[in-house]
Length: 223
Length: 154
Image (cartoon, rainbow over all chains, first blue to last red; front, side, top):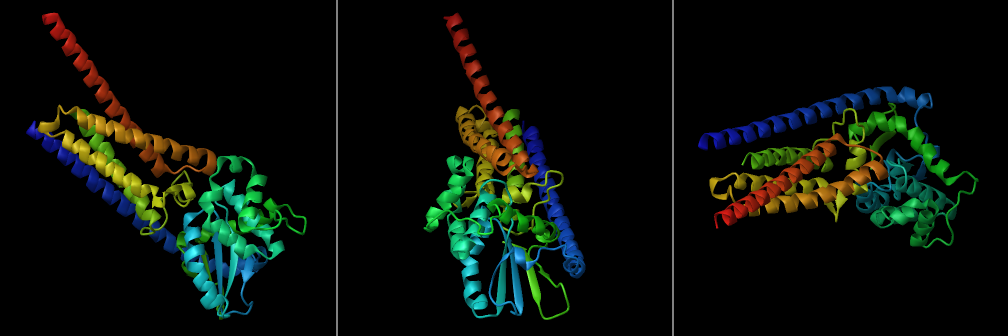
């Protein structure tokens, strides 16, 4: 009995040691790869930008002077809690201290991680541009993502969700894109463009990238 | 006895798995190593990775630690015959299975992404629940056998 219990503890110990070792190995290996990927992306970035392979600013939503010494690119999803935390806790300070003072330009790109709520949130925010309400709409969408994003009834009715998001913000009408482009297309375009950059840099964890040798510095990170 | 030991080993696997998911969620070890499923970061960054403001992986870690402690206590000679251990494990893992089913639904039908680390946890908790229920059923059968044996003697 005692010996059998001893074997049981030994087994638990072995599983614990093997598990910790495996987690350590996987984490270290993953980070090593991330650093290598970041270096590779940084090296390839000038050519990618020149060839138009990367997303251009025109498909993002920008705030701040075009000639700002620092340009911040954010790729985010309206259903991602960490994107929401960045939007509600960090970005207001960045906007106030850097963007509004002309020290930085901020460009937002949609990166809906999932079909359904993520895409619809992106569409709603993008179409609010017509009412000059993109940033206000974004603030509401990020701040109340749980409230509007997980309602099964709304999830089944995309139109209803957009109307609800519009009502939450107090917009007079459901946001529509003035150029006649369907809202889904408006949100999908930057997502598709950003996909390549996302794949190559998502694991870099927001590590600074230097696309050229000039004064401009562009940081790419997923919010 | 061996059943509780098996539950302890499964709960320890759950502890390790949820600890890895939590460390990734809190940003200490970068993204998750995902291999073939490609959905780990989608799942771990989604709105379903938090419950009442707490990371789901953290709730899982706490739950597995409690199950591990219960199972280890249940292997001690003093508690081997104690049915309350099985009942507690079955109840706790029952809640966990219900929560897991909700999360699995979200993964498959809302997020349409599968995370292999979540699948490991799903299998572990289902197995723990199955073993606990099996233990309770066996105990019930033993009781009815001993009762009928006693009535036969009477």
